[in-house]
Length: 439
Ligand code: PMP
Image (cartoon, rainbow, N blue to C red; front, top):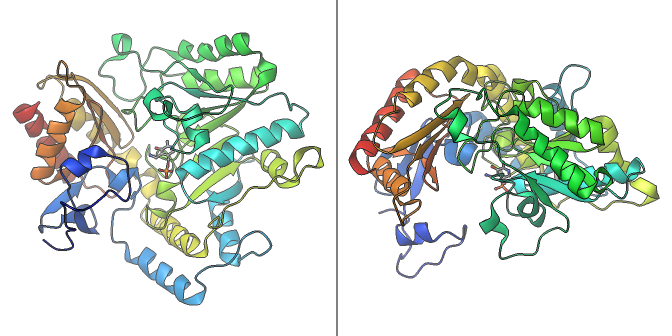
C-alpha cells in the first residue's frame, strides 16, 4: 500500500470521526469521475468528493492556472493591500450571480470555506439591520435539520442538535420546523406538492420573539447533509414573503446547491426565489483550493463596508480572496461555461430521477428524494442500531467501486456534473445490489 500511515499509531488530523478510525479507507489519486484507492482500485465518485468537485477531478485547466498563479504571486496580504485577480474573479462571479437581471446579488465577499461564508453572511445581515436603524434585531433563525458548517455561527443556526450540544451558541438563535413530511410526500420526484404552509412556522417565531428582535433567517434551499430534503412547492416563496412582511433578511446557504447542482447556477435561480444573501464554497473552486464567497445585494454589502452608526466593522480573513484560490476559481468558471455544466443537471435530471426512483420497493427503502443531480435514499433504521444499515450499504458500495455518502440511514448522492448516462445506471445498479445484499 502506497502512502499508508502506520495505522496502529495514527491519530485523526482532519475530522472528529470515529468511523474512519475504525476502518480507514484511503484515496491517493483522482481523475474525471473516479478516485484511485491506495490499493489501486478505481472507485466511481457518486458524491463529487464532498458535494464539491462539480466538474470532476484532475482538471488540467485548474491545475495549470494554479501553477501559473503560484509562480506569479503566491500570496498577498488582505486589509490594506489588494490584488487584481480577486477583483477579476469577483466580477466574473457577478455576471452569474444569483437573482434576476437588474436585481442580481452581484456583490461578493470572499472567505475560506463554507463555514466562514455562513459566519460572514450572518455578520453582514446584522450589520445591515444596524445600518437601517434596526439594531435591536440580533436574533438569527435557522431550520431544523439545517447544516451550516462548524463555526459558532453555523452551529447556532444549524438544526442538528447533537452538533451544538457540547458548545455554547449565539444567544437567541432559534429554528423553524424542517420541511420534510413523509406522511404526505413519500417518494416524490422533484418538489413535493404538499407543505408550503410549513413556512408559516416563521410567523410562529415572529409571534413568539417579536419581529423587532429578528435579523435574518437562514436555510439551505435543499437541505443536503441531513439527507436531501427538498422544499415543498411554494415553501421558499412563502418564506420570502414572510421575511419581507417583517423586515427579516433571508439567507440561502448554497454551499451545496450553488454552481449547478440543481441545473441552474444557483438554487435561487432554479426556484425563482431571490434571498438577500447567498453563501457559497465547495463548487466555487471545484473543491480544489479552499474558498468561499458570500453574494449580497449592493445595499446589503455596503452595510458591511461602510459600517452602521459609523462603527467600523472588522471582518475579513487572511485568506479572503487568496490569489491562488481566485486562479482556481476563474479556471473553474471557464470549465463550467465551456462545458455547459451549470445547466447540465437539468438535462440529466429526468434520467437521474428515474434511475433512483427505480430503487423503490427494494429491501428497507422507505423513501427516495431527487432534484437536479442530487438524491437521498432513505432506509429503515435497524432496531437499536441507527445508521448501521446505511453504513453497511456504504461499505458494500465502496468494496464494489462506488463512493456514496451516508448520513444516518439516508444514502446521499451528488455525482460530478460531468456524469455520463451510463454512469447513472452504474450508480443505480451498484447501489441497488448493495441494498439487496446487506440492507
Ligand atoms: N453549509 C452547507 C450547506 C454545507 O453543506 C457545508 C459543508 N458540507 C457547510 C456549510 C460548511 O462548509 P465547510 O465544510 O467548507 O466549512
